[in-house]
Length: 347
Image (cartoon, rainbow, N blue to C red; front, top):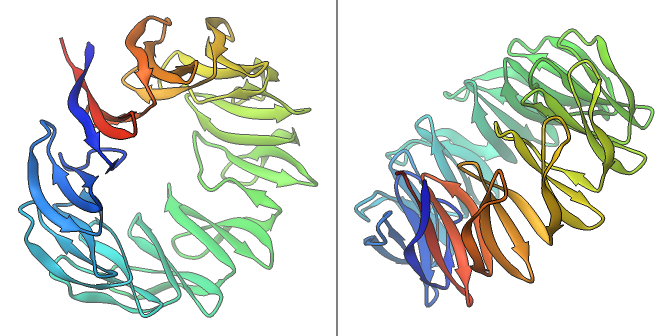
């Protein structure tokens, strides 16, 4: 695998990632869309633009948002104060301070009557009205009454809810699976465990509310690849699902593994890489580092950015002002104040 600069750094602004094969780019205050070869496929000349999703992208003109297709045809007029990407055929929009959902023909399927509409997941939207939250389906039918102070999306059949300042989890029938008695709950259920906060300390419970890992940490993350980040006495480390300390709490920061056997760490103000056993693969010499995708890592040294692999081999020399995450095989880069894109070349 190789990486090369496919789209030159000529744009004033650019989207972080490609979506549906296109990305928005800005030049001289106006936005258009280019494909993965850098060809302009939609000459929009809009004031702002969002990413494509399900064949449509939101665009802004004269202070209002609407939608175009990949040919640049205006499908939905610019009439909204805010417009999000399409998901499962609907997009959340805001009109005159109220939120609802429209379909791809611009029909208001869920009337703009709510103070806010949350993202659509697992068949339900969280909604907020008059300070209280509940859930509706895609037709706008109320499935779970608005009795909560706050809600999250559904994932794995459960959603986090806040009632009278305490957090718990409900199922899609509105049954309180985990009682609203916790000071804190991590938003999502990952790898069989939920993060909780009790008496100022963090630990983990299972789906039935049983304590699996004691509340003893200053902070925790979700589980990913069998490990969760924890902070103890101001230092980061990692534990497994039984609470065993796999990576000692000795670092300033530990990042996710993302399916890779290496993760970024920070020690004494510098960044490097470790494996899942805590062995240092790349010494902590960099000013910054993070996982960029495709088993590559963004690294910064002396103010310049490049890419290394999991073993520390230099894939892209440190010549850029910034490098972002790869998506659909490309990553945005910045050089001398202009933006372009690196591309993954499969060998």
